[in-house]
Image: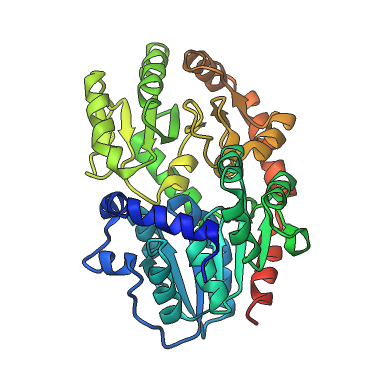
Length: 417
């Protein structure tokens, strides 16, 4: 029987279903996508470990934990669901032995059909994907659920407080939460999750293990480019590309040999950003088209998926985007773990705790507006000692906070071993 909050939520979702389906149609993976959104999937022959990752960022964050589970439980089938097609691509690339499905639209008949067919031993939801009917279907089927790397940004917390009865019911049906920081733990508890079932484990993002051949791959790229100065604008959003390109134009006046690696966050914007670069009369090469970086290239448009670590490793300096616009920022630990000095904008809500740790030790530089970027780039690129001090401080933050992976692995296994 549905509770009143969930009944109201389901009724509203039914009314909005045509709009939701139209939006989800843009995330098609293959001809089975629509049926998967309705919960129609194929059963697995082996016992199932099910993980849900909303999109690319969550897949990357989940990778260390899921690979450990695969190695330790080879007789079990890993199934990973995502909301997006780009997330699906990352799952297939990083987990070739896993099975992937698109997550069903959160209507009770869809989610019940999905769970009854999948019959997972455990469900591991990464970060903040709280779908009330999906969670209820797991509870009805007796499936233990873990919220791994649990986080609640200030923005998400404010939004969830407005529908607290619905969220509290969903949270109380989750078996345990592994929160990444005390502030996240406090927010989960305030929304209704029992404190007795919550552990603060830290973030498994600190346990990032770059591929062993990454330095060699990065050195190979630098040898191809033959540039002394390379900087990256990583995970840009609409409204950020133009000021970043303008900063690069200023940098080029001082160093005409400088190269910008521009990495848009979302694939649907790749062509749009390419047009913007052309409108700025800048010489561009596109990674997806295997265009070579020549002596005339000013911007290398990195319009591929799954290569962010390589681009970071090939750069002398990084600007972590999603922070000039009120997006909340992106992963600060990737450049920190790779020894790349970083700059960010002022909007870091999604990584507030990590930003504070880096800020305290001088592990990053922050700007308040785009006009400050070019002068800071010039200063840092001419000061290798400052860059070295930044990277050393940032790397110590990463090293001192490792260990969440082992804790969350133990918690996950406690639910099914």
